[in-house]
Length: 314
Ligand code: A3P
Image (cartoon, rainbow, N blue to C red; front, side, top):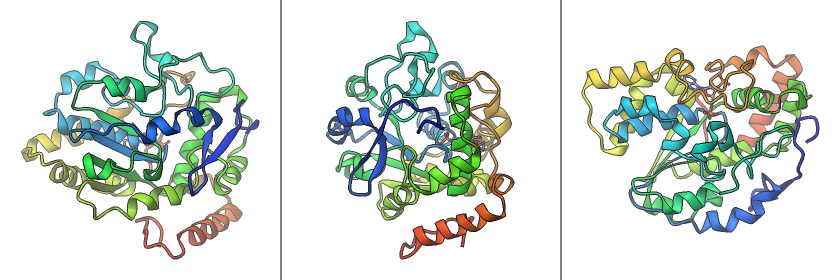
């Protein structure tokens, strides 16, 4: 915890022992009882799995490809995160940060607004777009019977690398962990929102539910157009081939990195970008031979008995 730059203790929640900041206790029940609406669209994921990418795609598909608004309003306002604090417009974007959730308890982080997002979202007009990193079991039990949910998953090894850089970006000098330290904490389920595979598997088990659409980051990297078409079908939206091609361009890594409304660097010092490398398999350059073996072991042990299949691991 200290190596990573956190100041506050974590707790383990729910039947699977998901790691949460202690302050989550105050909000868990309200979130569980949060009133879902039939016209909500939710994006659910483990942090660093391609959430932002998926959110922007979903928001545009649901809003008649309104690039004008997408280019003028930050994604976190169009598609707020449930388990964070609300943005106070007059204070500027930096104050949106995750005060009561995973990254808000870092040393040195600017003080955030105290209004939990779930409260703001309760009063928000429909249709609402809601992002969350909480697993299905900690969300309202009627979620999948009521609203549409898109879940995105990514190879846990790439999640670990990307999560490490997110910590470095936010905690800056207070983050003293090497990647090897970080991986050690990751594989032992000591980081917020872990255990990762259990989180993913909860949604994977629901992949045939008509209200859940399951995406893999690696499939989006391979053929974004095909994945967009799958999401269109799920959301019951029809766009011409030309419009889909335009969206593919808008969602391309380079365009994303230059888009300040999605590349949320508010808490960084510019050295590490929120939209960082955008690679599938980049973990290979971060794991030494021993860590690669450990990762194989971690994956096979955790996937044992599950029918969850990552496209990047067999
Ligand atoms: P890296 O750190 O590996 O680059 P999330 O939004 O869930 O926090 O996920 C962030 C990860 O998704 C980052 O991974 C980021 O670069 C990647 N990402 C975001 N937009 C992307 C895009 N348009 N194409 C490819 N990867 C993207």
